[in-house]
Length: 483
Ligand code: NAD
Image (cartoon, rainbow, N blue to C red; front, side, top):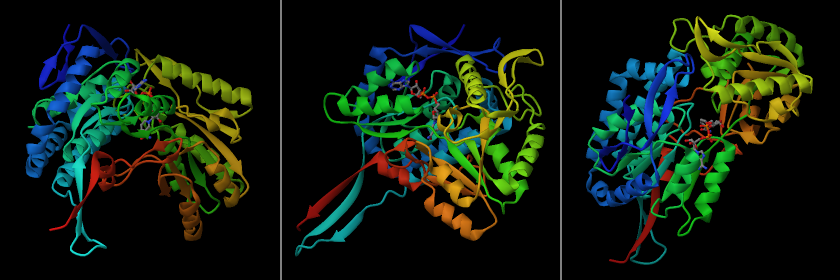
């Protein structure tokens, strides 16, 4: 049995214990075994990352460009192989997995360019003879804590800017999807970044998270995951001894897709299917609330159910699968509990809700895409993040009520509106309390080079991705010069 090691200070380090990574489409298939880092490994990685700062500062922007470009190119060259691995460990249908791997490659390429575009400003002072220089410096050692649902793209959108702007990285991927993280690390290990500047620590977040964050040599923490864990990370960052760690949290969503009377229903149905069910609904940007005005409600629902009947649930890597399994037994249990809660709350189970413990002879965590109708926004299925292929239709009178319901949630990540009215589209764009608005487009599915993030309980701190990422990964310094 081969156990994949952690990567610390430029060396592969085996742990004493390991994780077993199981294919959710076929639980008899073990994707691999992965070392669990211990406290000594965490300390060694922090020490190495701290020591690497001077080596990193000696790298020219061109050398950082070359290393990041190498990573992006290799990911692209190995797209099919990495997508197959991703689909095998995470359960996302192969087409979605390919799109994710492609996006990871694009992100490394984008930030390779950003390494050459780090800029400052010279500003005239209010005082005679004085000038003011504003420059950006690396933050230092950054802990990257990532979830399982985008096991290569999310690490990419954290690691690439961290390295582009000259920081050292401690990478703690999800214990549920270490294989993609390990493959990415293997590529980074050959990219030319100095030893110690990139470290992989696999294992459980409840142990490794606090071990990393409580060490004041860690300057910043970028976290994506559930709201509950996000709150723990925030508390650790501010309550540790020494200076408060800079932190950034990307968390859950309860994203609305509003369909107005004047919508093109073909477009609206495709937006709903894609947003609610693709990637098995396991996206922070999934459209879990479909808010539909009453004139077109019945027509929209009947077309949506017809379209849902064409979605094929099955092995993530099998030809023709549109919806793979959910990630594991715990998530399946949670999804099924929410289906029961929806029924108990009085919503009507209009489609799906059925769990299959095996498909085509393979044991897996299969759940049919599930639609509730007659839901009200106060129900738990409309307020709490489920994180599965489950959506609820909420019938509203008009656009005014649709907007009010859309905003009535603790979350504020993404929101969509389907309308052919420019006036309505503009009003929703202005008044939706979210970080990302999609007009006649699914709530999920974003570009790799523009800011990503939300408000309220969905996000805390500066935006990820695009040029805005520099706000997190750099420190602004203001220098007064009196020549
Ligand atoms: P999770 O919160 O269970 O875990 C996320 C990461 O935190 C994992 O690496 C985990 O090991 C680690 N962790 C666990 N306990 C920790 C602790 N005490 N201290 C530090 N780290 C700890 O989330 P998950 O189940 O992996 O991912 C699903 C969640 O992620 C959903 O809520 C989803 O909405 C959210 N998500 C958000 C975005 C976004 O950008 N807003 C993107 C993808 C996923």
